[in-house]
Structure formats: C-alpha cells, structure tokens
Image (cartoon, rainbow over all chains, first blue to last red; front, side):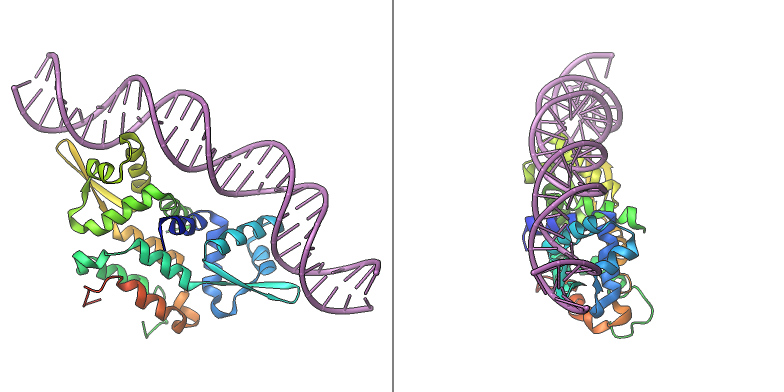
Length: 116
Length: 116
DNA sequence: CAAATATATCAATTATTCATGATATATGGA
DNA sequence: TCCATATATCATGAATAATTGATATATTTG
C-alpha cells in the first residue's frame, strides 16, 4: 500500500452513495449483494450505480463475482485492512496507550460480538 | 456520526498531502507538530498547507492548539474512531470471524507494540 | 438466432476541488 | 507603536469528478 493507492481508497468512500454501498456490503457480509439489489435499495440510477461500484472495485474495497446474468458484490476486508494499516502506521509505536481506546471501540461496534 | 460527516472525513484523507499530514501526526503522537514544521517536512507552500490543515480540522481528524505565534496540530483519534465505527458498523454482527483477521492486523502495524 | 434481463461504457454537461499569488490577521518583541 | 514571524483567508484559473441519456456487452431463455 502506498499513498496513491490509499488516497484512491479514501476517495472512493468520500461520496455518499459509495459510502452507503460499502456499508451495506459490510452488513451483508459473506452473502454480498447483487448490483441490482444495491441500486434498488439506495434508489440510484443503474448507470450511476455501475460507475460507483466500479470506483469501489478499482479502489480495492469491494470484490465481485458474476452469477449468470447478475453480479454479486462483497466488501473486501483485505482492502480495508491495507488502507487502515497504512493510515495508522506507527500509531502504536510511540505511545501505545494512545491507540488503545481507539482499537477497543473499533473492534466491535455492536453488542452481539463476544469474541473480538 | 452520519453519512455526511463521514464522507467529509474520508474526503479529507483522499488527497496525498492531507494523507501525508495525517500520517505524520499519527506518528508524532502526543507531541504533535507545528503547522510550519509540517509544511517544511512535506515541502508544501504555506497557504496550501494552511488550507489543507483546515480541511482536516473541519473533518474532525486533527485538533490544534495555539502556542504563541505558532499553532500545534495533533491527530484526533476520537475522530478516526467515529469515522471507522460508522464505516464498519455491524461488521461483526453477522460473521465475527470475517472481521477477526482484519482487526488483528489493524491493531498494530509495527513490531514494537506488545500490549495491543 | 432473437428477445429479454443485468450490467457496463460512452459522451457531454455540470459541479467540485486544488494550488497559488496576494493579502489579512494574530502574536511577540524592540 | 512599529516590525517581524506564523498562520489564515480571498479570488481565480485549472484540473477532476459526478450525473445522466444513450448505447453496448454479456448471459439466459425460447
């Protein structure tokens, strides 16, 4: 991961529709969502959604897989990891306790997760 | 945190200079850096840097504090936490094991951090 | 192969963002 | 108060990105 790739990922999340898409895919988890389903849920025109999905794809934040006539999209957690590792590089280095509360909160934002 | 505030934060990190600034401030930790120091390190013109720092400030990703004639900037980890909590909301909900490797890697990107 | 469905690409317009020269504001010191 | 230093704001031109109608491609079905 370098600066260019990282800014590309942040740029992909810097637009409301794309952020909404990504969050939907995070919630969808392994099941993912069909391109059409996403467009329908978010009420976005077909070609606009296609362009936005393409931006997320190029940024490495989502993956996709063709299923017959449809295409299923998934959040790509490896991409997110790479982006955030770069962003927070050496955060722990100097003063680990500074990052601790941050890590605690981020690791699980819902209550139904016991093992994180 | 809502979609607007969150996209604003991602947009702030979607430009090379600002991403560099934020990463510097993450590394600087509690010591922070003076506005002038940042501009010098990154070889960016004074007014350009000022505008960029302002974007990061408005996005809630950095804090600052006047020290006489100079102004010291710090990474605001609470802002990052809010942004990422929103992004990854309900990630753990469905399939915790999906997020586990992600969390592991992100919690510490250097080796000299034993307690995270 | 023709029609239907799902998604992607193209072209053009509009809107946003960036960097910068010039200038303004704030603070400290003589 | 006057000057120097540090940072912020303003105005503008150049580059980028977003949306959309029209159209193209890919897949399935008849």
